[in-house]
Image (cartoon, rainbow, N blue to C red; front, side, top):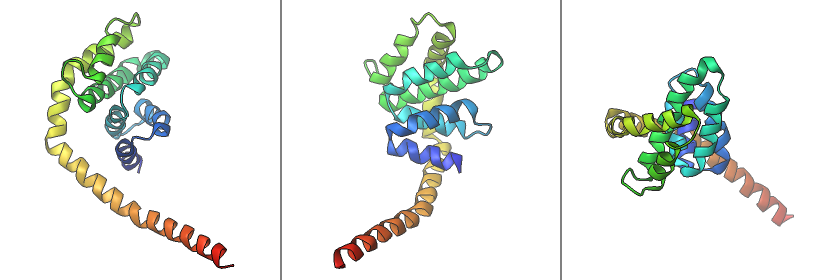
Length: 162
């Protein structure tokens, strides 16, 4: 369920999703954190600050794991915003190379170094699986949304008719 939520939030691009996705990236015990990283990348360069804060606040024993996850989210950001020179995501990550905090600059270096692998992974079988999963999740949720809209319309009709 958390994975489905991360995928859908990534497609919606809602700013309110940023905090929960950052928390999921840092805490998720399953492989669903990868979907949180992808969703954060889809939110654009505005997530760089919260990602850096997540990394800076990680407990010493989790710094390496959180650093790898933040690096993945930064690579997803570059991919989503255009990986070419001058792309807003790439520029934001390249700027982190000069940050004084070694955990942040290391995550930025790792993001740039793994960008090709992240791009290839998303272009391969995982992308198709993710798209299928998103469609299934959307199909499962759509009837609930339609029912909620119908209820709202019925309430309006009742109020207008009274």
